[in-house]
Image 1 (tube, rainbow, N blue to C red):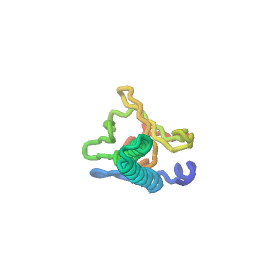
Image 2 (image 1 turned 90 degrees about the horizontal axis):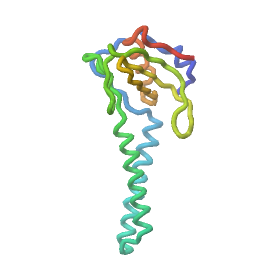
Image 3 (image 1 turned 45 degrees about the horizontal axis):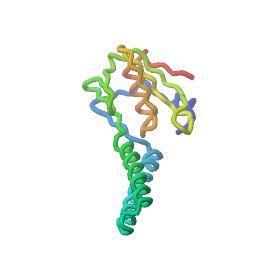
Image 4 (image 1 turned 90 degrees about the vertical axis):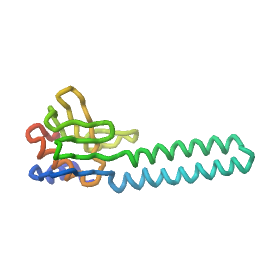
Length: 162
């Protein structure tokens, strides 16, 4: 992703969204989550097979289960990430989160430190009228289009923090 200042300059509030638009993970996150998930799955199955060949050796069994847990976690994160902008119903949908654009009180685009690696990420901080705060990290493909569509839909409720 390019620098935050360039991202703000390229933000276009005149994009019109129609129908349903889906946004998935960007290529970098896809490679990391899917690649490590598949590798951990193969390693876990291999360790369980080795444990079975050794009459269920406890160390190999434990290592295999750990690899399988890690692989399922990564694969779940990969397959679970999807953000849908439904312009026909006027809603944003994601796993566990659904809200209408009319019920948004404010939306702030800003940089924020996220994750265990403490990296600066561009996020949308959305507050609804019910007081619910939703932070959406822009780690998706077409993040500029996503932010532009949100900016157009929310109008004056959308602000940019520098």
